[in-house]
Image 1: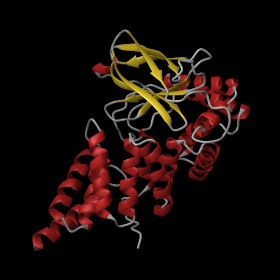
Image 2 (image 1 turned 180 degrees about the horizontal axis):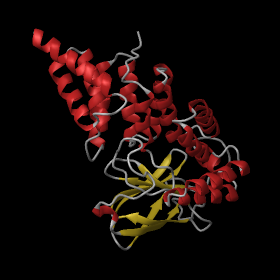
Image 3 (image 1 turned 135 degrees about the horizontal axis):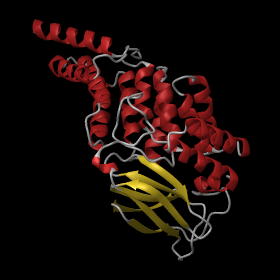
Image 4 (image 1 turned 60 degrees about the horizontal axis):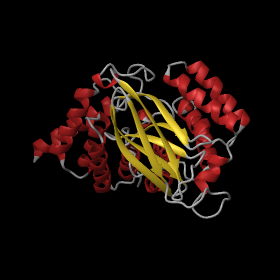
Length: 345
């Protein structure tokens, strides 16, 4: 029987919204949804200095590659904090990158090339070589991602990047306007559909799901859309469907901690508590700091495995951090029950 514990409320879906929209640069430390202004950079020392990351992408023959997607990953948690596409001469640039360690990754179909860099208050230059001999020009083989990207008109892509820049500057109305224009120009713009879905996930779940399904239909290798759709399925206790989306996303992007967090929820929802704990351990290994919802899920799994002392400890840790959350009542009741059962033994 599928568990429908109160712990699996829509409130936990918000944890997946720690994703940063492609192209925006902001703090990547995990935080509960709604705390602070998500568009404002952290006041931590990491944001007192910034630099520029620029580079080129070429193939094995040394030819420059245009319209190749380049992602900037935060090394501390594996998240993608910005995306760009190479220009006609194969160049790309990320501006105002906070000081820290990053991995720059170029993607073309199932081929990829990456390089780690340390950003400080100066320019960092990267030269990436994709292990392909030529630029893909049709929909065959392993190049479906690149083909999907190539179909996007330049005007739509420009509007999308303007939307991301407006979002980074905390101008939501301007960001929404540019995003709408991008989708008006090209309705099958997978990344834009994903971003729009993120904006409506907490207020209009059916519309968000429709956008995510459209995004995946337009680009079956959009791992971000797959993970968010898996999270949406989790919020509806549709765990079998969630598992399909999340496993596909894990295959495409094995460095995204949110996917493992959602897989933990899926397995706990399917009463495979041991697997859920393993995915939570994987999530913790990818995070740079404590994340309170992990304590909640771990407590739920441990309780179901009759490991009451550990469960009570995890739930207490959650309540110390989130005493007034939507899930606090369920967590408090489970903690108290675990303590009572422990006392009997």
